[in-house]
Each structure stands twice: as structure tokens, then as C-alpha cells.
Length: 87
Image (cartoon, rainbow, N blue to C red; front, side, top):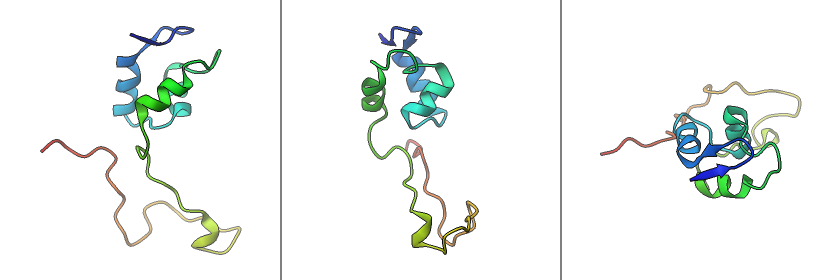
């Protein structure tokens, strides 16, 4: 079934991009243009991706002074897995 009729993007293509790491409609749009013309498919893409697919980012001002940038992977906690492996 087509998700984006403007660019002919199917459900399978959206799922493939999501499995490859795209977890927001904007990332899907970067991968295959879906949602960049009329925008009618953006809610469908959001529903397909579900909630909580991407790890949440904490605001920088809670962890460090304003104007500084934290490098990813420098904290003490391990990064959460995006896609758990099948058991």
C-alpha cells in the first residue's frame, strides 16, 4: 500500500528506512522524500513509527552550563538500544 502518493513511497519502504534508523517523519523524508510535497502522509508516517522509537534527549541546560556542548557517548550510562534483538 502507498503511504505517500506524491512520490510513490510504500509502507514497506517506510518500514525499511525505520529499520535502518530513521525514527522521525523528517528522517523518513530525508531518506525517500515522503511527506515533503503535500504533507498528507506525515500523520500516517508518524503512526507507523510509533511513539518512543527515538531515544529522548535531555535539555542541555539541565546537565551543564549554557553555551557548552556535551559530546555523545561521554556519559557514564550506556546508550539505549534502538531496536532490541529478537530473542
